[in-house]
Amino acid sequence: MNRIYFVRHAKPDFSVHDDLTRPLTKEGVISSKKICEFLEGKNINRIYSSPYKRAIDTIKELSQTLNMEIEIINDFRERKISNVWIEDFNSFSKNQWDNFEYKLNGGESLKEVQDRNIKALYKILNENSNKNIVIGTHGTALSTIINYYDDNFDYLSFTKIKDIMPFVVCMEFDGNKVLNIKYILDSNESELSNN
Image 1: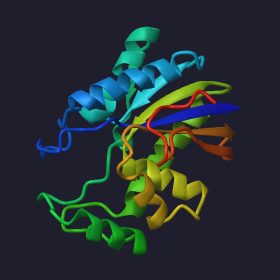
Image 2 (image 1 turned 90 degrees about the horizontal axis):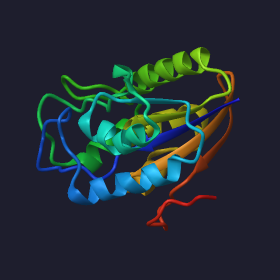
Image 3 (image 1 turned 60 degrees about the vertical axis):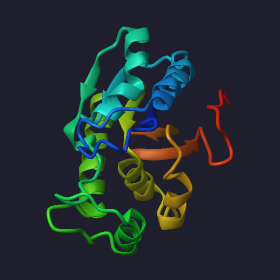
């Protein structure tokens, strides 16, 4: 059995519009320390991440504490919305959840994001056996992974977590089959739980 802790990044600085280099806020840096404290006792064997700075920085302290390299997986990157910044993210997001093929010019559909994230996840599952793994990821990318295994996870579910940063989901797998999904942080909590 593999246990994977998906870590949605801590709070980023949205004044930086470049998706790849957007850093964490000071609050986000503090939250990333809580992530480290929560995960350091979980017998982590491997750490992977999206190439985006905010995802890497959220798990960097864990990597340093465990003296373990973060392996960058490009396919775990966040969804590309478009070549331009959009102001009305909520309407755009609802359109995407209503139609997984919907995308803007130069952007990706949720189906495309889901396909590349699941492909990368399968590769990790196939290359590892009985490991505890951390994957630094993003809200939409993670949501498409959850939706792949639980089609009840929809737009309403996404809206409940979209502002929770960081957010941790633990999935246990037998091969490529998910055995259970546990939300470590929910919308009513401000601290990570060690349960």
